[in-house]
Image (tube, rainbow, N blue to C red; front, side, top):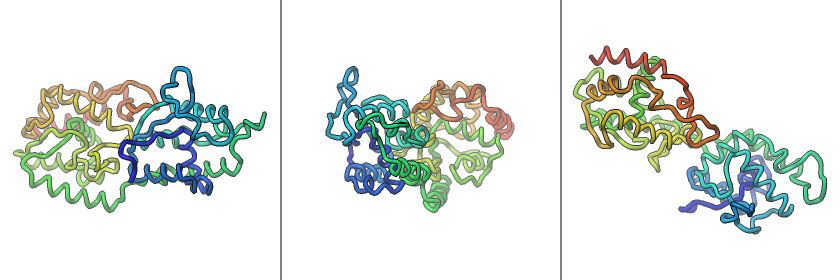
Length: 325
């Protein structure tokens, strides 16, 4: 079982995990690396705290030299700082493992200049062997799915079937607020039921056919709409899209929508009335979906980077305004 309260690790151990995935037998046998690898595979959102012996301003988080590898204090510190710099993080940073390892795969393709250097200037700066560097490259080429597997297709298909059956049997369909806007974007883009990755097209189809459907404002990545999504983490009822960082911006968008509509979580409205309120009060996506620029960031999302309202939203809004009267 992974630790409940997370793990405190050194930044270089992230790269050691990739080496183990690439066939480095020493790292694969290393008990600390094995423990980290198994903990992340068991719980991809396990909080990881990245510590290093930096002293000065960040001395409050210094872990001591116990985790150093034999190369020496200077090598260990430079390696950890180079990694943190690449990941745009700081000593003592705590984030879900999924986010941190996605950054490793995105931003550290090779360890040159981090764990090895162009030439050896002294024994203290020998760095990783060519064989170990090659193992890192092999592990990196395997992709993050080698550490954090994707949801099985069979599981998502089964969840799709069960959640759709629940949708037609409940008194009110649970929907997280901001994805109502996503349903308009999908409709404007021509997406129609059946749709594999969420139940929004099916929801719109139901509303068009049955005017008495009601919708409840639900927090988080609720089962009824998001059950088949590849990026739903069922244990936390969470959205882990955008390489693990989707939860925060999605929650903020939910709250922006609730404020615009004058609702709160748990509010229940007839579906057609709810959509008409959206048509009237939310004419575009920018003020809801926009995220201040900056990458890598736990706030970054693809649609949040847009500089203008979504044309698909405008098209879907126009079409559904006509269909829903």
